[in-house]
Image (cartoon, rainbow, N blue to C red):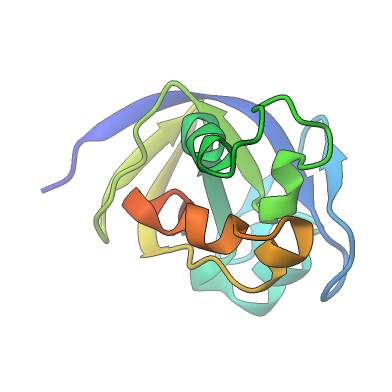
Length: 139
């Protein structure tokens, strides 16, 4: 059984192609079965098409690196997540439900940090592993 938790959306980002830079947006649509509109990953992998990162988890990972959470060298988009939220503990279970504004999302898989994280900052991949800090993928 899942409980819905509410959070506040504070960032949106998409990428147009594989390994393309993340582009931030002021608004977008989440497409049923297609991820975030305009995002390469959502079109390719509908069940894993929307990635959500909690600001608090991102800041904890940066703190582990000895980095200030406002450090401009590592923007949250380095995580390559679509949505940045705050004020919500993201569910750490498959099938968990999270509410972001009017959108209700179901956790399909944890987001596994990859070696791209270490391209942004050495050690970032490892810092994102504990407690699902890398975020969640949702449908």
